[in-house]
Length: 166
Image (cartoon, rainbow, N blue to C red; front, top):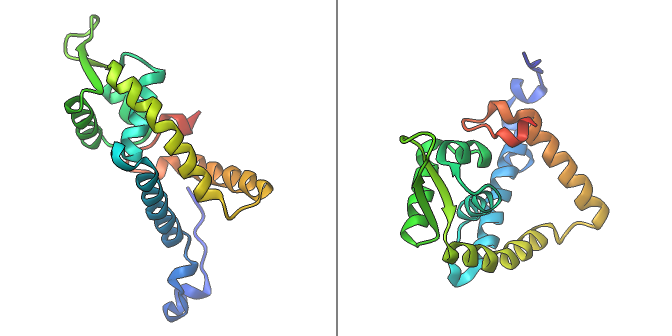
C-alpha cells in the first residue's frame, strides 16, 4: 500500500496553486498534445487514439479487440467505438477468429496501411513540437521520468496497459 504524506497544503487549502499541481499540468499537457497532433494530422482526421490503434494492429495483425484495449490502455467500450470508426472508414477489418468463433481479429486494410503510413510524419512532427522547448538532454530525462510515472502508476488506471506492466 502506498504511503500517504501529510503536507501543509492539506491543512491550508487556500495555499494550493492549481498551476503547480502535477495532475492539472498533466491534463493541460494532454490537451496540448492532442491539439498539436490534430493540427499536424490536418485533413487526414486521425486522432491520437486512432493512431495508437492503427499502429498496434499494424504491428500485431490478427489482434483481438480485448487485447488491443489492454495494449493501448483503453476501456473496452471506447476501443469498440474507435474500431467501429476505423472500420467505417475502411481502414480496419474485423474477421472471425478460426480458433474462437466468438472472437474477432483485427487487420489493417490496404487503405488503413496507407492511412497509417500517411499519419506517421504528422505524428513525428507533433511529438517533436511538444518536446521542442526542451534540450536533447531534457527530452531524454523527461521521457525517462514520464515512463517511470506511467509504469509505476499503471495499476491505478481505470484501463491499465499491459505494456506498462512489462
